[in-house]
Amino acid sequence: MSTQTPPRYPFAWTPPMQVPEALRHVHDSSAMEVTLPSGDVALLVTRYKDVRALFADKRLSRNIARPDCARISKDNDLFMDPNIDPDPPEHTRVRSLVTKAFTARRIEALRPYVQQVADELLDEMAAGPQPAELNEAFAFPLPIKVICKLLGVPAEDRDRFRGYVDGFLSVTKLPPEKVGECRQNLWKYLGDLIESKRENPGDDLVSELIRVRDDEDDSRLNEHELHFWTQGLLIAGYVTTASQIGTGTAVLLHRRDLVREIQADWSLVPSAVEELLRTQIMGSSVGTMRYAIDDIPLSDGSVIKKGTSVLLSEEGANVDAEVFECPFELDIRRKENHHMTFGAGLHYCVGAALARMELQVATETLLRRFPDIRLAAKAEELPRALGGFMEGFTEIPVEW
Amino acid sequence: MRVTANSETCAVSSLCVYRVPGVFDQDEDGLVRILEERPAAELHEEIRRAARGCPTKSIQVHEDEGAPASPTAPA
Image (cartoon, rainbow over all chains, first blue to last red; front, side, top):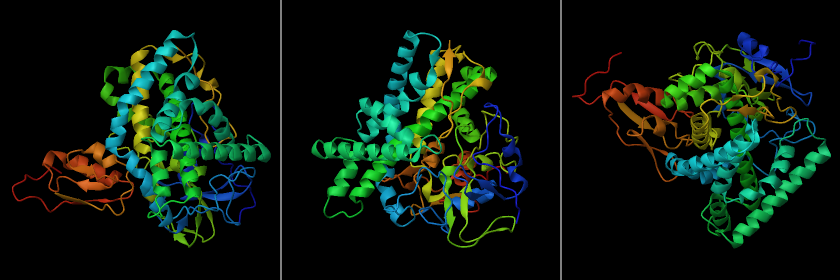
């Protein structure tokens, strides 16, 4: 047993535009112990082969509300709800109620709306002063409007729920009593929303879930699950996409050569979006926390012992040289980019197709509308969000 | 080549439908459906990519089961 404290995780990103030094060494072994913001220690699995296999391994439970499981934050019970069973078959039963809203057909039917919102937001930005702040002008309002439309949430409520959601996702940013207050306010807000939709149902996903919940012959969803999934869809529906629009665009603008390449051939947008997702500059893998309910061998013969708290390193898998040629290079033409940013296995991100479509529309519309758009600050000096679940840039000044 | 898919394990990533829309489709719930079990040779490489990229490995490619008349894809 080593007496040294394992390295801190998430890894420090300094300076912001560079790959963290720690990430260059994560494949020296198949797994490494890391110290979480809570001070607890977890095992970070880093190789693509293992990460991908373990995402699908039922010996890793997503139920982390266990006394001996490592905590991400000591001030916030992130991803722990004792009333929700996050493992199959329970999880799969509820999940199948929402996946039907995210099929390719449904997502493509939303594309014109996303385009319209993107156009409107950028018209407003063009009419305003320079430099503009990309997060507030574009990166956040776009996915917020889209997820609100899909869920049937009034978009003007965003000023209310955004503050609650920030608190909900706090790791070290807020004291525990503030976190608790945000969590309670968010839950209450969702309760009010659900009640008002019960009275006035619409053609949206929350109304659909309420119909399932209230159908006496259908026992697939209880009231708590209805709340929980509405909350999860709302949060995951914009926080991640907004961060990725912001950081992805910042990285692109930092690389004028890539912007010019895309502008010369718009068919590169989807593969550029995937490559920005692969390099996953917006966050860490603390959200993948799992608990080993049995011994699990890794590809190099080492064994994850039963009772270990495990993190599956998406960012590690995404730079595994066994799978990705020149993994630290941003290659917007990668043909086969099966990155782990949306996970794998039965917990694969429900909203992945929606996120991809939004990122494609956002990237192309921005670079078409403002052909000479550039950062109005040094890329190395962009402030990064600290103390929360997401680590995107907090301010991205742009001019054109 | 013959291609099959397991809708029981499908997680509705929609990746295969976007990659090779003429071969893969989704039912009402989003679960994978095969439209063309013996696809044309020019699609084979993309189908292999779709199979490799499936997050739940729900797509199976049977390389040696081609339609008798179809030409062999170059290695």
